[in-house]
Structures are given as C-alpha cells and as structure tokens.
Image (cartoon, rainbow, N blue to C red; front, side, top):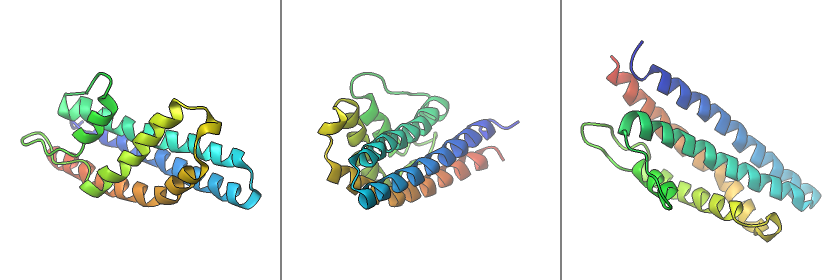
Amino acid sequence: MSKYNVLVARLQKELNSIQIVVETATSQIEKAKCSGDQDYALAAAFSLQNFYTGVERVFEEIAKQVDLSLPAGASSHKELLEQMGLDLPKVRPVVLQDETLEQLQDYRGFRHVAIHRYGFELKLNRIQELVVSLPDCYNNFAVDLQLFCDFLQKLDQ
C-alpha cells in the first residue's frame, strides 16, 4: 500500500460529508425564508459550524500526516488555516488558494462566534449571507483539495 492512499481516502470521505452539510444548510435557510421560522436559520448556523469543523478535520489530517506540524494553543485554529495556504518546499505545495483561504476565514470566524454565543444572539442576516456563499466556498475548497490529493497520489507513483 502506498504512503498516502489512506490519507487520500479519508480526505475524500470527509469531503463527501462536508458536501452533505452544505446541502443541509442550504435547505435549512430556504425553509427559514419560506416559513419565517427563525429556528431553521439557527439550524443553518449549526450546519455552518459543522461545515468548518469538517474542513478543519481535513486540515488536521494534512498537518499531522504530511506537514508533521499541528498548531496548538489559543490561536491554533487560525494558524492551522493559514498553514494550509503555505507552500512548504520539499514537503508540499499550498493546499488552499488565496481565494479559498479568504472565504474560509469567514466560516472559521463564524464558528468561533457561534460556539461562544447563545443562538438568539446570532445575527440571522449573517447566517443567511454565509449560507448563500457556502456552495461557492465549498466548490473552491473541493477543487483545491482534489488538486492536493492528486499531488499526494503522484508522490506514491
């Protein structure tokens, strides 16, 4: 078995789960719009948290298995995201393009706010904005991740 086969399989499995979260968030925000029920928007906020948590799982796997360097401490979430935008000569190319990195900063920030606030304190228009932008962010992330997986598979050949 090649060195990165298992990692690529895990990353692709996580990507599939993240896609389901994106579809769920989109459905939830549509239900909120149609019904006027804010509970659907709060459910979408939870899906936004799930989205970034899944993305971060991908980053953690890459940091542990490829970079051999997983940030720790109070700013570790921010550092991990930024690490994925770094070109590490003789180790790996960038995982994320600048546009994707910038988009993901918004979801990382929202997750932080959502975790540390009561649901009723969240701004519903911000939830809606993030959900509307979510498919584009996911698509960019998926393209970047696929290019990275292609890189790993070439290393094994």
